[in-house]
Image (cartoon, rainbow, N blue to C red; front, side, top):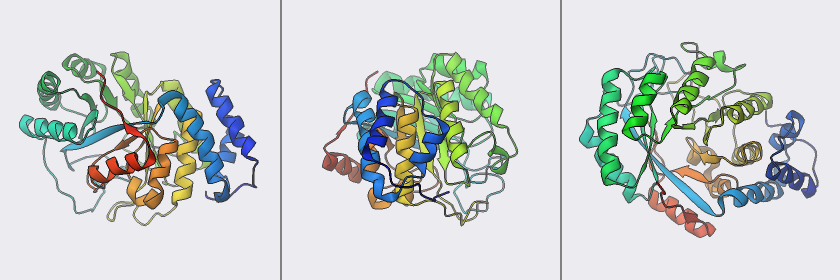
Length: 335
């Protein structure tokens, strides 16, 4: 997957930026050029991606914070996930958090300067009781704090999406994770179409759709291209780009396809393919980008602060300093 193309002129990358700014879609062959670019071309490639990012988002960075509202106990067999039924990872498992704990998490998100608070729960999809719990918490959060709320509760029906929308949920996350072609290699307990349907159900109620990918799970350049095109068609407003953290005890433990330079190429690729959308550097950022993670913000305009679901992130203070050192600024929440 990491074989390199021949050296390209910097004007080649500027051409891709020009196409993105004109709203023209890159071809599959052009995606090969980006994802297979020589490591020596990282700087001109990122410069061109930054042109597109700056046009739509300036130098602002959106911050998001996750709370793991329900951990483990999941009947799905997703190979990347420490919470799945096939995982042997030693994680903490608990049922849905009570309202006061969710409210405390919202206050923490506010204190970390996050504009979006993400309530995430393991499982195939939420029960009626779990939707009630989210609805009750969201109503209080919205009354007290200037936060956008993103829910990520698994496969979602239209009626449950409507209930979340009425409560004040702004965004719903359900990642494609991988392409339709590669999906059965990653999970078999639900279909790719189930995931697409959930994104559509959320969008049909007026909730902003959030859907993204996980790179590093054995996918090809074609798989990444297909996901980017699918996300265009779904009109996902926010695209989390996760990089596999091969957690010990999961079926994908030991997989090691990524390096920091390739991760930067993936971020640039998604910026060119989805130029107007929020591109968020998500799970696996610290592990896979390492000391180069700050460079990812030349293509992406959003990150998570704090910990992820079952793995640790770097502290919010370090993230704030990273953004400041780059000369960028944290975007304030605008409801």
